[in-house]
Image (tube, rainbow, N blue to C red; front, side):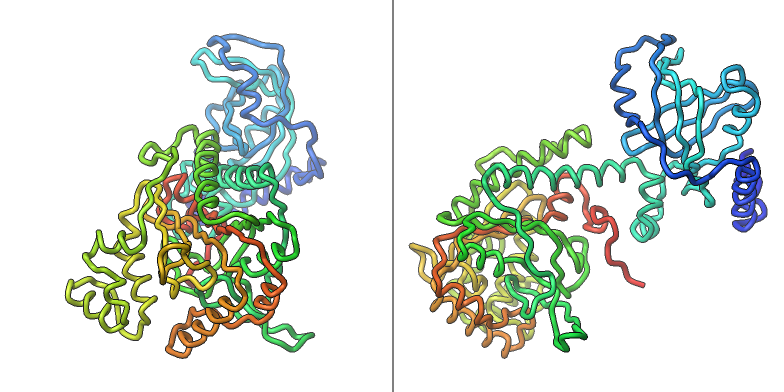
Length: 496
């Protein structure tokens, strides 16, 4: 029985006391249980790769230095086996009395699961075909004063996994791989944009006026300036001001904040990449999505070892207009019922279960689409050509009156991207802002505020531009097959 198991009979206090006693014994022996560094460490995965194909029972003269957390221990006496885990994987250690000597061998076996150690060892393949390191020497790198979650068999409690992500990462190898995959996805997005000539920029998170999306903001107070500021809901308006300034291709990858409900696909803070390209339109943005998604899907598969076989990211993707998509799913022609009350009546007539009270016509259209149509869009799909009322920053459609050149990209039943041929006529933009002010007066809490500074920027002249925002969190959900945004955000917002 392990020391933790023996102490557990007396409760958590005994477990913690037993571990602290070992900490003090290390110090009493003149050992630093929290040293400054352990240079020259190799990743466990690299050690494994270096000996791929080694025959069972084979010995080598290859010495390696690794470090990680003790995850398991088997055996006592003259020989024992331990498992060491780092970010890249797990490897078996062999501790032998005749190699280490009685003092070091005994000290190694006295360590607790969860302790961090550095090991120098010689590689060999066990008779069962498991690559192992025979321990020639080791150092304690951090004494763990609390036991690991669930003996490293995996932290199962969902609430604890999300609230205490460090325990989730310790206990679940799958979680470690997931967040490495997330990092690879972000790196792939950046590489694609950098290679395409885009300039990465940074715009304010604290803004005197929010805008660029249909959402409610978080508000904060700046004491020194004695003024209200908003956490940005999007980077759009600042990025388009940079297009006006002549940067021509810009992107920003960072956090946005929206004071809205929490759901399986909504977190109050989330990661977006927005990019804008001068002399382009929404057709060009569709092409870029079709170039980018296969790349990030391949990068994800490299980390996780396999790709989602239920989704096909091979272009071209299906295209359907917003009006046709709603008509196919509900039988409602939204343009035949452009009046708000008529649309509400059509929804009620078909017994479609969405709330309608106090919603404007564009809000009804948005709810109808998002709650009825969106969940059915499993394969990559571009939904194109939206009503002007839903898109205050998109340019009028060049051939369809009353519509704008906008698309949203969907896959796995959720939106992952939103793009426009950007509106660059300052007079039309001013009129759109004024319409949003009217919607706000009618009770739309997510309507756009009027931004005169942005209009004045457009008056200096913005070239024809295509722009897009891609949700990184949802992209990770999509590519890793996760159903909740809380699974792919390291520290998601949680209720008390």
